[in-house]
Image (cartoon, rainbow, N blue to C red; front, side):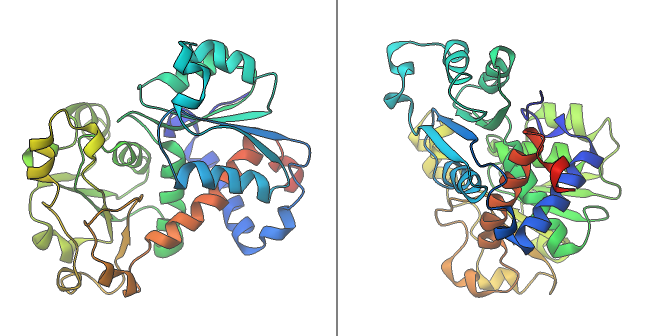
Length: 308
């Protein structure tokens, strides 16, 4: 039995096979409509979510399976003090696979240690978000043809952005990748990402503050929102929330084939006018999330072997 807790839990080759399967699903979703008949997915979301929770549910329903779970900690026995370990022991008797989002870093890892079913980390605090990373990789690969030899600009909240941390860890395994880390001083990427991921792997990176100066150099621009829920005081959030706003004027500085990604939800960091630009890939990215999670569920349940 395998889990997905960290984006590096799958090798580059295994990641490629998941993305290949996701591509096949995207080409003919109805062909997979009964793959998970009789299987159940438990969605244990201790933190608010729209896209991630609903895309997991859509993925399982699209595969012919069923879904059970809760959408907030208040509606679970966690409100009574039940531990993650006890919850997953119980859920293991109700479902075949589990997707968990939790505000505490490491909670899905702890769940996996006590689980009798595969556990998928659907986001733990400001730490990791591996299924979003698979979604990002699928979108980048479909837009650019490969995952190597790219200059990736990561812009906004690089300190608390778990999607950013996961994406850096995963892309660092591909040859010729370079990063421009675009953020205010207060929201720079955590030092552990630099010391444990970028420097040991010899990955070229620059920490910069100007989005405008970075635009002409980028193959991918990954925008993020400044996350109000991660701040300890309102004043810092208000001061930093509008630091970077992507507009059509700034898009004019970019290459014709650059792609703009965003894990969503957005607040105002990408103006609505940018949505009409063919380089805007974030709604396509959200749709890819369903295909990726379908492929992941099949893989962790061992059903992709039947599909090959």
